[in-house]
Image 1 (cartoon, one colour):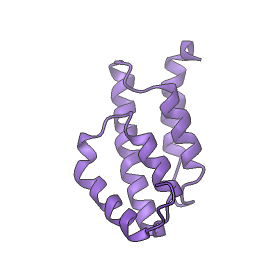
Image 2 (cartoon, one colour):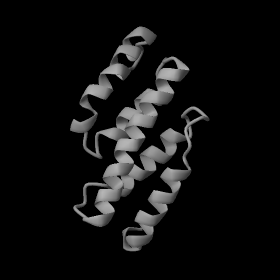
Image 3 (spheres, rainbow, N blue to C red):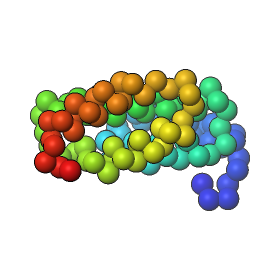
Image 4 (cartoon, rainbow, N blue to C red):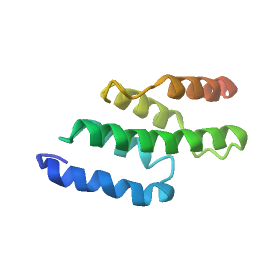
Length: 111
């Protein structure tokens, strides 16, 4: 992404995310969200891809809460928190905040 400013390229890549979404693990999603929030991309495309990625990550967070494996980390949570601060305002972060608070509440010893 360094120096590459082609919105068309990022639009094509953002559409490709949907076909690999089920293959992504929790560690893959925060860097993708961070990139999507920082590159030139149409507002609607950015909003849609962030919603899809965040929904997938939250699903994995809920699974991790039910059956801990260590796949979801505090680093991922912090990365997503920072990136979502750059996301379009239409992204409702209330569900993210609620689920992360519940997850961290169960694992207070991680802090």
